[in-house]
Length: 268
Image 1: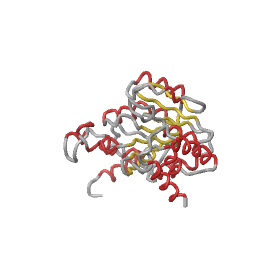
Image 2: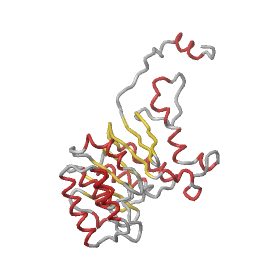
Image 3: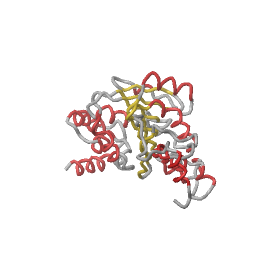
């Protein structure tokens, strides 16, 4: 039933200009729906964010976020929609309705500070302005969830993760949206096997995957790997990275020199 209602609202919203009577009605209803426990698919459709319909991100987010819904979470969204000519903010309102006790922070390279209200605060900041972004993260975080929906440039996606990952809480989640640009030269990516792809966001995060098995290494790990990464999941156009700072241990006594010598032999 909920799925059919979400699709019905999505169809109502097709080609619906913002600010119309129906748009305002749907947004008012969304506030009530949030208090009644509506899932993200429906809230996204009611508010008109492309995280449902144009993209299918909200089913993934529902699985990730449901257990935290009633908690006082802190969520940061990089890029709030609307681009330069419109205010955007549909997803910020969705998060505010979903997390009834949450604090929602948005940043955008354009001035969208007019979207600030109540539990939502929006700041103007480039996603690769390290000093300003770090200062904002220190003031507003640490965060349970960070979503990068910014420029979608591969270099920016990688650099923003480097800046913000330290500001994800233990047990928190970092999400990179729209990673289809990893395959597009215009965004700094490229087809598989090309130099452009080697510099892509997808390739960069794939090279982090071994972080989850750091306790099993017999040789020193490359500097990029991070023991705080507990999992990396790849969905359609999404990368989801989870943080867990609890110590992980091998089931083998890898500090035993004889065992290490045995395991290092290619013949087993």
